[in-house]
Image (tube, rainbow, N blue to C red; front, side, top):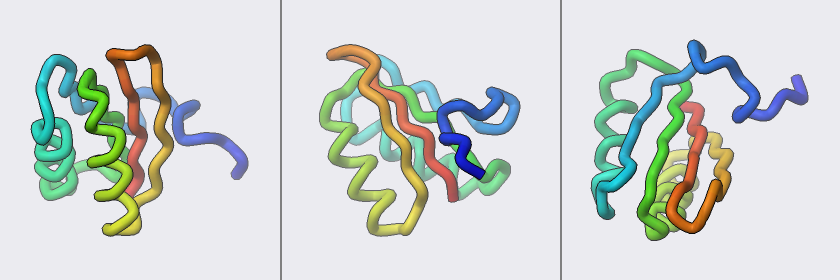
Length: 82
């Protein structure tokens, strides 16, 4: 399976919209969604550039698969698979 996470259908992941929310809210929203356990894959959208560090460290520590994209200077997308 060579398909990247970002190319999955929107129905296959839970959208976490943290646009306009400063850190640490994007990470807290991700943690809340992971804890709920309703989905295996999550798309986190954030406008805070610090979320790049927070999300990548969190995923590395918890051994979650992460694919990230910088959409613009004020928009970052993270696809996380638990």
